[in-house]
Amino acid sequence: MRFKLLRRRLSISAPRMIVRSHLPWPLRWALYAVALGFSAAIALWAFEFGKDIAGLDRSSSEEVAHLRAELDSLKEASERAQAIANTADSLLKAEKVAQERLAAQLKQAEAENLALKADLGFFERLLPVAGGAASGGVLSVRGFQVEPAAAGQLRYQLLVMQNGRPSVPFDGRYELTLSGELNGQAWSSGLPGGAKPLQVKQYARVEGRIDHPEGAVVKTVQVRVLNGAGAVMATQMAKL
Image (cartoon, rainbow, N blue to C red; front, top):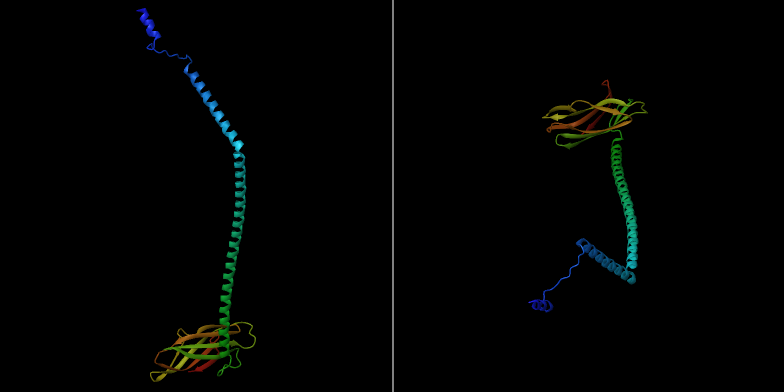
């Protein structure tokens, strides 16, 4: 019996024996960690050493520095271009404002020129004395003209001047009287609302329109200039 047991233990069919270390598990994990860290350090050193040998680190640093220099140069160029654009925009706005101002001044000058031409034509028509202006007075009515404007309406123009060298303006009024026939009978009419105010410094240009019945035949129109007291200072008559 003992021989059989001894032969079984010494034969192939003998049971396996496992030799286990008696190190505690925290120590085993610490050893594993040290080994892993050592391996990682060797791998990192090999990578850096290979990169230094190949010259990759130096070339990459030089390329980054070159790109940063180009970026700074581009930023400076962009800032200069933006400053030039802002200056150009300001100049364009100022030029536009100046052109608009000149256009407004030109338009105003053209309007004043047209007004002066109109005044000149008016004076050329009215300066010659037509008929009998009041003589020896301080005022005179020159070139009183009346013409039809529409059915039942007349347009009148006159120039009132102070004689000599006036020291103060004349404050008064003027009135118009239309005379003719209406329905076969004598007819006359004046300005609606009565006389109109008139102020003359040296001269005064007066023009307007006056209505009358469409069936009336207007033959004459008389203008009278009155002072503040109602006295007649000058008179003029126009025939149609």
